[in-house]
Amino acid sequence: MKKFIVSAIAIMSASAAFAGNLSVVDQIGAGNAQGTFQAGDFNSAFTGQLGVANGSITIQDGLGNGASTVQIGAGNTSLTDQLGALNSASTTQAGVNGHVSDTQQAGVGNVSVTVQTD
Image (cartoon, rainbow, N blue to C red; front, top):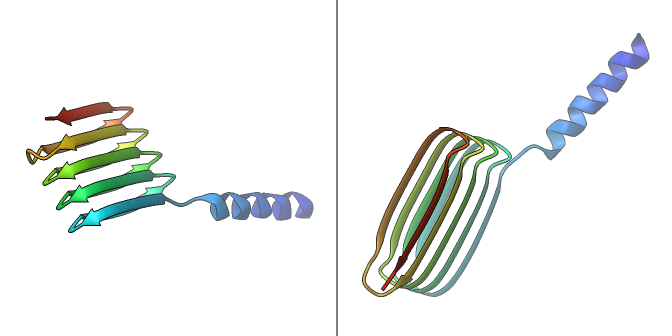
């Protein structure tokens, strides 16, 4: 019984060591702004900005949510807000006309794809 309890604790500790969130941000240009806020576990977010004065916010609260934002050009604005589990959102904005995107997901297994171009 003692071995079983020690093994169970070791497994739970190892699982907890791999829990967490991942955020990757790449910015090239001038005046780009980005914020990522994550609560929960196994959430992942990628933001890539190439250009001038693009803005992006990603908020994730839950388990296993995934978000990707790519902005190329100038004056694009994006908000992605995910509450729940296993939600997926992808936003791509290309151009200089100041595209605006607001994606809100609440629940489980929602999928959103947004593409905006000039």
